[in-house]
Each structure stands twice: as C-alpha cells, then as structure tokens.
Length: 468
Image 1 (cartoon, rainbow, N blue to C red):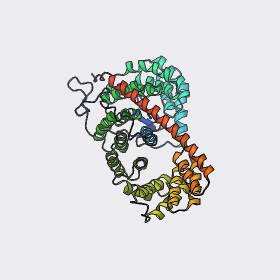
Image 2: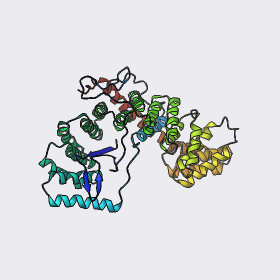
Image 3: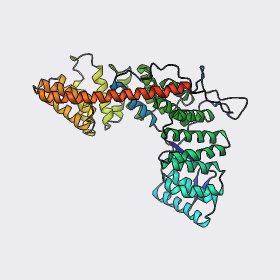
C-alpha cells in the first residue's frame, strides 16, 4: 500500500507560509486530497450506531465462502500471470493529488526555518516534532528519527509525533521495530480517526512482515473506524493482492457507492471482477471509470491487460482503446492495446481490412518504445498472416531480444523457422519455449498454493470486532 500521511498537531507558520494541520500525502510525501464518502457512516464512537458499511450478508474477514475460483480468471499459466499483473497494478494505483509541489526556494526556506527553531529551543517538543514530521513527509526518514525520538522523550503521549516516528521506521524498512512501536501508538490514539490511522499503518507493517492475514484485519479495522476512500481502497487491495477476489469485490463495490467519483475504486472493482471470472462486468466498470475522466490512462491500461487473455474483447473495449490512442498518440501502450483490440475483432484470417491500420499502430508503438516485446510479437503475427516469413522472423527475434521470457515469441519463431526450412533453429526455439512454459506452470502452481493457504486462513478467522 502506498498511502502515507502525517498529522500535524497544530498549524506551522513559517515566513508567511502556512502548513495545514493535517497533511495527507502519498508515498512521495506530497500533499493530496482525501475524498469524503457520498453517504455519511455512523459515528463509530456512538453506542447507538455501529458502522453499517455492508449490505447483507454482512462482510467480515471470515466471509469467504467459495474457493473454487481462487486460481483466478482461468487456470493456464499465461492467464494467471496476466491476472497477477492486474492484481499488482491495482495495488499500485494512487489517489489523485490535489496538492502542488513546493518550489525549491520555498522548500529550502521551510527546512531552514524548522532547523533554526530546533537550534533555538533544543528541548522543545514542538520544534523537534515539527522538523521530524516534515523530514518524514519529504522522504528523509533517517534524518527525521533523532528529532522524533527526542520529541517522544519529552512528550511520549502525543499521537501525531509517535505516528510519524513509527512511519519513519517503516520507511527505513525497519519493519520489526516499527511493529514494536506501533503498540504504544494505538494506546495514544484518542479518537476514531487516529485509531483508524494507527490500524492502517499496522496493516502496512504487517504486509511487509509477510503477515498478510493480520494486514487484512488491520485494513478492515481502519475502514470500519474511518470510512475514507484510502481506507476502503487499501483494504480491498490487500484482499485482491492475495487473490481473495470475492470479498475484494464486496469491499470495492461498497467503496464505489461511497465514492462514486473515485476512478481507482472503479478500476479496482473491475480488476476484482476479472479475477473472479466476470470479464464482461469488469469491462463495464472500466468503461465507466474511463468515462469519468477520459484523460486518465489507468482504466485503459487495465482494459488492455484484460483483453490479452480474451478471445474477443468485451463490448466497448475497442472503442475506448481507440479513444485512448487518439488522446495519447505518443503513448506506446495506447497504440499497442488498440492494435490488439482491432486484431481480435477480426472475424477470420480473410478479414484483412484492418491489417494496414494494425501494422501502423504496432510500428508506431515499437518506435516509441523499442523494448515493447509484445508489440513485436503481434507484428510478427501480422507479417506471418501475410506470408512474409522473413519479416515475421525478424519481428519475433526483436520480441525475444526485448522480452526473453516471452514464451509465445519463441513458439512462433519456431514455426517461422520451420516454414523457412531451418529445422535446427526451430528445435532450439521449441526447447526454449518448453523451458519457459514449465517455469510459468511452476510459478502459477506456487501462486495457487499461496492463494489457497491465505484464503483458508481467512475462512477460519473469527469475525472482526465492530468498533465500540
């Protein structure tokens, strides 16, 4: 997960520059906006109303009931590898940033002012804490830790300072120590929002420590306490990352209803539906996401990934990928994915009407990105269909040079060598293809075992306690 934020206890005013008392930023440390839900959840601290986030049946971390689809959308190594790519891409989606990067002059002025404050008052909690928080937010955690530890020694009960200290150790990849310090962090949290932040950070730490089940529970607890877009997204992403697609769909569905303007929530819902085996529904959600902001490349990129394993692109995909290529003509993937959609839309080998456009799009994509092996592979198929064996061999060779583990490129090159009456070369490529296929199968089987183990553990977990 990549939402990092630091809460400042009070506004900092430096040289006429005001920092808000709450900074919510991405891993880059820059300020970003946080979406509010379209519907207000119940007050988690109220005894009169427990959070009612879920439609019946109520979802808990124990709510996975069907493990028959845990292998993902389809079961071949190629499909599973493509699905894994979608899953990991989902986890890396970031929220839209509403902040502006500070100028170099303002950045230097801010740091100088904060350091001067510490020099004037070495034992000041506020001066040390503010400098430490600023350094963490600017991705300089090693420099931040001494100031934050000094501030903790002066006032060990301040949540914002302790949160920044735990986050600094997390960013230093000292996850075990961060986990140790996170215990006192929860104890200092005085309201639902602070508790949610603490549980969210614990979820991040647990994931890095390999405690995936605990990470899911922590992200769920954070979302129950604070129904924010980042909390819902990260909870669903953690489930999807470990291929618990059914509960991920449920979380992202509710997240989409709470935050209908969140493109990444819709995109993540689409990825979850695809993993669960519903490509048509996934395509529909992606279409909606791309229509929210046609300039955002992420929904189109997910469309492109999804169509790779579909015999026929779902309805609406080709049209929107055409829009992507038109809006971003110098984007290699935009040209490649549109070419794929046109290639798959052909009714038969005799349908040659779009071949010239497909070839043009592919030639453009590899001109923009000479390392795009998949584009060379499809270009080779286009040449092969036109009986241009020499050109197809060259394209397949370029695909392999760019992406050596692209198994299909080796297989197609073997076929082309046979047509060119070069049996020894064909045999060598077939051996490479078989080697890659075996590795892919072993990787897919290992992934399946890990997925099943995670979900079985998830089923056996007691339902999470609702917030008091």
